[in-house]
Length: 226
Ligand code: CTP
Ligand code: CA
Image (cartoon, rainbow, N blue to C red; front, side, top):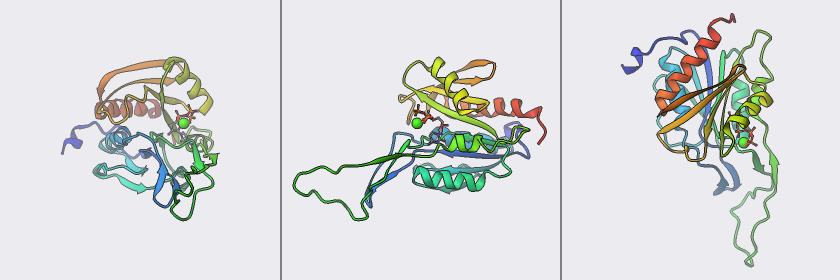
């Protein structure tokens, strides 16, 4: 019901979103994850749906309910998230990478639960995970689809690092926030970086920010033809 009061600025658009943390297994009962709650990504999925979009949400492990009308695909590892996204990206108008994707996976995960042998600690080995956002950005068509949006939580120099990260990722829009104190919170302050500079969205709850972000995305893709 509430949804019907939002302007349908993304009617007829297909939007693919990642959200939540990833989980990188160490053994069958242990793994490495991060403090992402998924709240921001789920709020973005809800806001996109309210705006009339057809929304697919590829989600790492969270305890959040699926937003109404959103198609959700659950994954655990960064590799699974990458594969699910690449399988779904064809024909999407917008990709929004909100997930806190593990930068590394454990390459020597144990198939059996590890035991505390003679007091020795396990030696984990790591390899870098594929960059999902960069992989999607690399599929961008000449006319600019899908429109790619990234999120970045920086612990320092957000203004400088945000602008650099947007350019390095080759994406038109990057949402920056000062992490990790935003993780799990209901409120956030974000800064939008695009080719003409940055705009601060004042502190608000994540759904309000998500709706503002969706309207900013809609404005930027409105002028384009598919
Ligand atoms: N991202 C991704 N796949 C990865 C890592 C990050 O899609 N393997 C996406 C995130 O979903 C986010 C954006 O890239 O939208 C920025 O993530 P961030 O961790 O800030 O950037 P990194 O490129 O991983 O750089 P670093 O962590 O070294 O700052
Ligand atoms: Ca990272």
